[in-house]
Amino acid sequence: MTKSIMIQGTASNVGKSILTIALCRILTQDGYQVAPFKSWNMALNSYVTNNGAEIGRAQAVQADAAGIDATADMQPLLVKPKGEGQAQVIVRGSPRGDFGVDRKNQDYINWALEVIDDSLTALSQQFEALVLEGAGSPAEINMKEQDLANMKVAKLKQTPVLLVADVNRGGALAAVVGTLKLLEPADRDLVQGIVLNKFRGDFELLEPGIEFLEEKTGKPVVGVLPYCHDIKIPDEDSVSLANLSSTKAEIKIAVINLPHLSNFTDFDALALEPKVEVDYVSAEADLSDYEAVIIPGTKNTTADLKYLKDTGLAAKIIKAAEDEIIVVGICGGYQILGQKLLDPNLTEGDDKALTGLGLLDLETTFREEKATHQVQAAVNDGYEFCSAQKISGYEIHMGQTQRGAGVEPLLTITERSGEKVTMPDGAVNQANLVWGTYLHGIFDNDQFRREWINYLRQQKGLAKLAGDSIEQRKELEASYDALAEMVRENLDLELLYRIMEK
Image 1 (tube, one colour):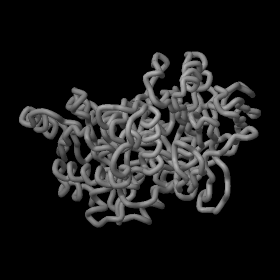
Image 2: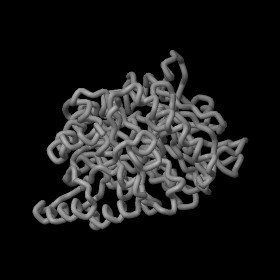
Image 3: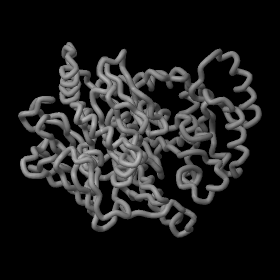
Image 4: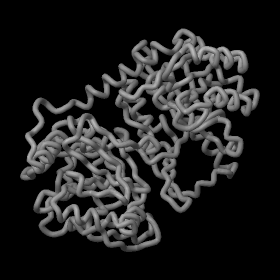
């Protein structure tokens, strides 16, 4: 019989995802074949599996910590907001169309629970242990009937639940007691333990609170996890966005904080490089302070293009390019760099045609079909900012982009979802100062990233970084292990395993 545990929280951002990562790693280290599962999530950060299925980025990271490939069953329902009350719904990895955010329809709820149960059953048949993650809080009374992420999911297989609270925010004890009090008795019985997360300070001051919790709720406190800020694991959502830097910065990179920004984890690896700072900037930013400006991916390219124009950021980006500041576009940002964006079927919004920033001679046409692929590619020869080399990444987009006459592609895609192909991707201007690509994860390629950073340093008159490029894979594996060790030291694993046996 498959062992399982579900991590729920008293609120969003209390640490459910990071604890799930830790437990996936610990169970793997202890010899179990383990998989993560999150039934439903609303997020813009997504990932493409080996067979082209789109799931939430957090579940891909959790699967990675477990040493397995992510699959669509690990997140059967992904909702990606587009704005104006609309969201794209991804079902077991494939888009099903745009829907309103209202989820009160009982037929929809019943159908969704069937989808969730099918995926959960499939994983239960493949793995020895499952770590489920909830979303938000299970005690949102106004959303109780529509909640497809918490107690309805736990009850499908009678999965025991750990309730996580964020001590650092304050009010954690009240949050735990209040959450449990608001649950139905059958749901409350599924909660088998409490975890207090992000604690810092004198533990002796917390001990009376632990005694109070256990006496008041009848639930054991399974662990108190310390506040941990030095373990570098990709965040789940933009609620965690912050300026990133490795050391005192010599190179500053601005990432435009678009309203519909997606896949911001594309830039985490840049901050691993020595003396690099990555700032997420808004309309007030002075782009002349930066060596490079990146327009990131977006769930709504046309809406974010309008935002850039309305706020004056478009003019600032164009001026930055004129001043020979490097400008880069990733996916939707790549489309925005072009001359024209055509939307004949109104898949993005209400405009059939928009003018882009005009920094690259490109024309993008939005289609109803979505491209989701893991890819292998080769950087084309002849560019100043990087050498010819093999790289990997992934595509998630609904547009097709044509280059103008004489515009050179950045890459040649050689493999797409396991099939051998020869396809140009991206574009570079003649001065090598403006470039773009559809590939998410391009900066996760160690050699490419280091060469590009050294090019920025060269443009500023700085010496190249000494030593080998940072190996992001090793950094990530070390972070998984450090996180697992920290949780082992502060969680009662014997009690956890007993709970999972129930």
